[in-house]
Amino acid sequence: MASTHDMLLASVARQVGSRLDAEDIVQTALLRVYRARPDITEVDKLRSYLWAATANLVRDSWRRSADARRQHEPYCAERVGALAYSAEPNIDDMIALRHTVLAALRALPPPGMRSTGAAAVP
Image (cartoon, rainbow, N blue to C red; front, side):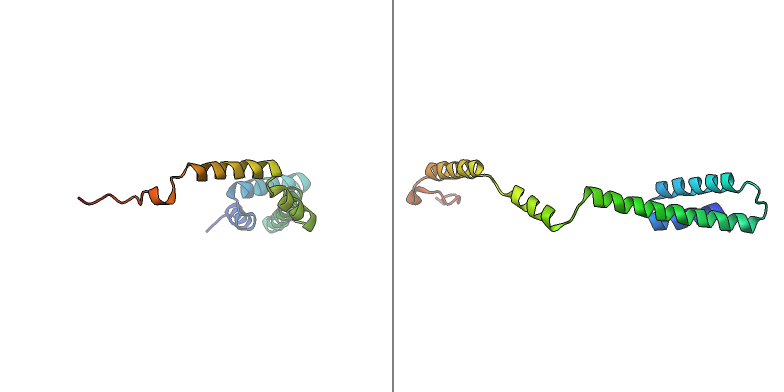
């Protein structure tokens, strides 16, 4: 039979998607419960407090993750428009590309002189 620690760890890992984060959350929950309620001697009450503390820490983790995503990945119409505008090549790059393509086209042999790439058969 799995221990309470193992069950908590497995549950939290499923919820946060990371075993390392789950270990941190469970350890923090254990410390918080011990500091807040060192007088609890009944196992069932201790388990209840531990599960509640863990659930609160998981919710805090979700909130922090959501805040970080909003901060680093703003998806608003203005941001998307600005990114699309900045992705367009500037006029100097377009002119340089045009000159490069024209020079490459001028370097090609005339149409009648082009090789087909196939070897001649004797």
